[in-house]
Length: 175
Image 1 (cartoon, helix red, strand yellow):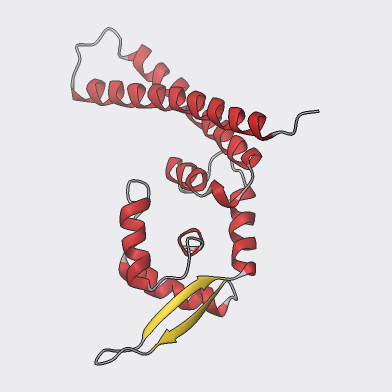
Image 2 (image 1 turned 120 degrees about the horizontal axis):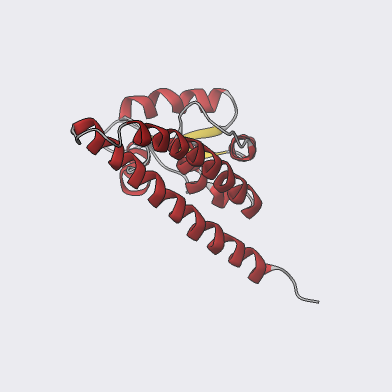
């Protein structure tokens, strides 16, 4: 939620729309979740709220991230886990929000995601070897889907890592 607020002052409704248009393929908070979390963020000092009077309608609450909220977001982004509780979705969400962190943080997440997927690929390949002589059934078709997806994501990680490293190198001061 702090990452969404980092895009600028928004109402709960506008935050929901921003999530639908920006990160819905990764994570889509429900409107009820958004409206529950916003007051908690304000109470924790991570966001501030101001009301705008509207004619003929209830007042509109607008929220924006505070410096403490940005620090909490950066701290969360800097926490690179080998296997976070939310699995691959957390890796991708953290990478999505790395505009609020350093390129080295993004690279650390890509490296951790790679290790996570390499472990997964190893497991899938062991499973594939066990069923190699069996006639293919639906479980094997789904296993091949998992293998294909992991291999494609590993290729994406390589491409993304190269792009981030290139950006870092081109931004480095020359002597």
